[in-house]
Image (tube, rainbow over all chains, first blue to last red):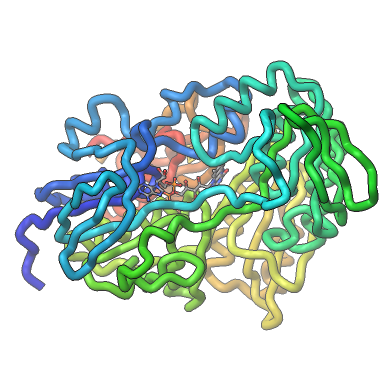
Length: 398
Length: 64
Ligand SMILES: Cc1cc2nc3c(=O)[nH]c(=O)nc-3n(C[C@H](O)[C@H](O)[C@H](O)COP(=O)(O)OP(=O)(O)OC[C@H]3O[C@@H](n4cnc5c(N)ncnc54)[C@H](O)[C@@H]3O)c2cc1C
Ligand code: SF4
C-alpha cells in the first residue's frame, strides 16, 4: 500500500480515545490536519478519577486533563469544543454538527463514548446525580461536604467507589442492588461477596436483592422507597446503573450499530474510512474471536492506538486480555479477562486472588485485591491460555 | 532509548509490568514502579513504549 497523502482526520468525541488518537497520529508521523469535535467545553480529560481522587479532593480538575497545556498546540490539532455532532453523511464524508456546520473528513474516528443510563422511575430532584462527566463529579463533591445520608442505586464499580469516598467522609451509606450480589455480571457470584465484605468492614451497607420502587422528595431528594415497603432516608442519591453507548447521532449513516458501533479487530466499521474505538464501540478481539463492548480505560487506550496505526497504514489487531481496576478504601481491585463458570479463591499475604476458568479447563480471568504484581502475572497467564491445573499451581505459590 | 520512572506519581496500577515485564517491576518496599533496565534493547522498544502509554498517570518517561 502506498503512503496516503496526508489525509484529514476528524475525531468525534473528546475523551480518552480522542486524546490518544491525536497524540499517536503525530507520533506515527501523520502530517495532515487532525480535528477533535466534542460536545464538552473542557479539553479531553480522564474519567477514572471522577469517582475516586477528584471526589476525595486529592486530584484537581486540571490534573485530570489528558493533554498537557501546550501539548495541543505542539501537536497541531484543532479542538472544536462545546458542540455536538448531530449526524453523519458518509457518502459526502461530512459530520453535521448540532449548529448546522458541516465538517468534512477523509478519515473519521467515532469516539463518542457512553453516557450514564437513566431510570424512568427517578425524578430530577436536587441531590439526585449520575456520574459520567467532570461537572457531575464536582457537583457531587460539593454536596458530599454537607450530605448526611447517601443512597446509591446499583452496586456497580462507579457506585461502589462513590460509596467508599462518602464513607471516608463519615457519611451514612446504603447501596441498593437488585441482583443477589454486587457486580455479578462482571465478577461472578463468588467474587461479588468479596466487595460486600469490604464495604461492610468500612460501615457501608450493600442491600442486595432489593429494588428502589420510588424516589421521594419535593424540591430535594428525601428518601427512596424499597420494594419491601421500607423508606430509606437520603439527602444525596447516586444512580449508577450502567452506561449506554452514544450512537443515536449515527442513525441513517450506514454505520452498523448493535449495542455499540460494530468494529473489526483493527477498529474499522462497516463503512470504509470510518473507525471507532472506546466505550462507543464493539470490537472483535482477534485472540478470542468475541465481539465485545468493553467500557474500560485500558481497552479504550489500546483501541485508540490501533486506530491511529490503521490510519497511518498499519495493520495491528486488537488481541489483548481486557483489564480493569477500581480503587475503593485505599485498596486496588484489579480484574483481567472475564469471570467464568469455574472459580477458585485464595487469601494471599497481600490480599485475595480469584481465578476464573471456562468449561474447557482454561484460565480465562484473574481478580486480585491489593496485589498488582499477581495481576500482572495473571494477565500473562490468561493471554497464554494457561490450563486450569497450572493456574491453580501458580495460585498456590502466591 | 532511556527510561525513567517517577515514584512520586506512580499509583501502582502495574499496567507497565503487564506490558513490559522484563523492564518494569514494583519495588518490594514501597510498592512503586522501578525500572529494571534503564537502557532497553531495541528489541524491547515496542513493549516499553506500550508500557509508558498504558500508565494512567504517566509515571514513565522515555527519552528517545
Ligand atoms: C466515573 C467513571 C469512573 C471510571 N473508572 C474506571 C476505572 O477505574 N477503570 C477503568 O478501567 N475504567 C474506568 N472508567 C471507564 C473509562 O473511563 C472509559 O472506558 C473511557 O473513558 C472511555 O473513553 P472514550 O474516549 O471511549 O469515551 P469518553 O471518555 O466517554 O469520551 C467520549 C466523549 O465524546 C463526547 N460526545 C458524546 N456524544 C457526542 C456527540 N454527539 N458529539 C460530540 N461529542 C460527543 C463526550 O462528551 C465525551 O467527551 C470509568 C468511567 C467513569 C465515567
Ligand atoms: S503503570 Fe504507572 S502507575 Fe502503574 S505501576 Fe506502572 S508506573 Fe506505576
